[in-house]
Image 1: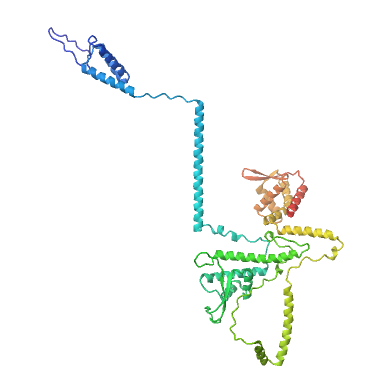
Image 2 (image 1 turned 135 degrees about the vertical axis):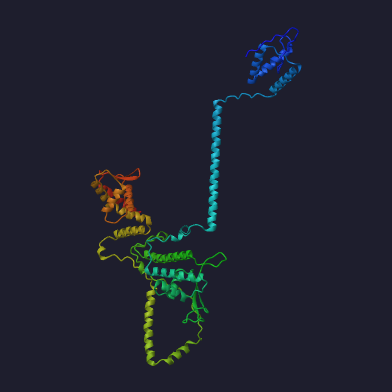
Length: 523
């Protein structure tokens, strides 16, 4: 809106309007005031608010002039001086220099090296933690014995080689020891006095065979440290047939126990003692087998630790019985008399006819006893190979010796052969017939390749013996291993394919298989 211009009347003074910041006329301003005004304008122009203020001032000065008082000028000077001091004390940030490419590469390499070191330290810490955890776990397992039984007693399950079979009477004795040890363990764990009468009844009930003191003596011969035998009396029998005051044969198992507690005959100890008894029986048979090998022509010598089966001509069932050890006998409590008194008393009770009959009986008994002693003095060992028959008398002795030496070498290799190697030889003996069947299967199918599953099913249906799919696959893999130029196996995706080269002669393949089998047998 436009403002009215009111002119003053004559004699009246026009009042000057006062603003917040009075301005001086340009003519009345001092030079130093001009400098202050210019500095204020420059400081105000450094900010947006100052710019606006400068614009307003310019617009106002364009309309009318402004005036400042002395106090305002002094305040502005003080303000300006303060701003200048703050600008001097505040340091300006220095411009960062731009690094070169070499410095950047060195920094990057340093960072990678530090990262690798940190990763290595982290892995070492993790490995150390895992190792300490395993050690703590091992110590806890040792302390608490939380290891599974099939791991703790794995050694007890390792039996002797399957080819070292025992005679039937030795097997019966081993079963008697097992039954006897079971009953003795039950009575011993209940803190009862173990007598032969109790053990005899229990063993006979378990085996349905007679069990006498002679068998206990044989057990003592095989395993002398198994029991401690004594003759004791005043043992409660709880039967009307045996008197309490009479002597009885008692037995106590020998158990090594380091702790102060009373030892127990646990199941693991029973199994360990049974295994040891069986091993002792095998050692007894090995001694007889060694005597048999020494009596052969030419003599053979096989270490006991490498023996896996008996000689084919060694008759195991002809091994002599185990002699019975002497057991403690009850002390003689009868009245002592001289031999002459006993004879006189006996003669007085017999008639002349009875004396003559007893004399004849004594002579026969003496002859029988002498014959038995002669038989016992010559040990019963299996007979060696027979002498040269009459049909071979025309053959040279050197040729016979070479043949016998070769046969002895072959038998010795068979006696010391590993069970895994024996199984491999059995598998190789079937490969000739299986190779013929496999070729016929490929000819009938009219395909260059067959899957393992199809080939195994066709082979099982055509083979004379019953084999499982896994066993047939094992035979085919061995056949491909021994004759790779004829049969190959190709794994494709999740299946295995058999590829047969029909251009290869089958007779050459069979001859090669037979040669490899002979080499395996010699080795």
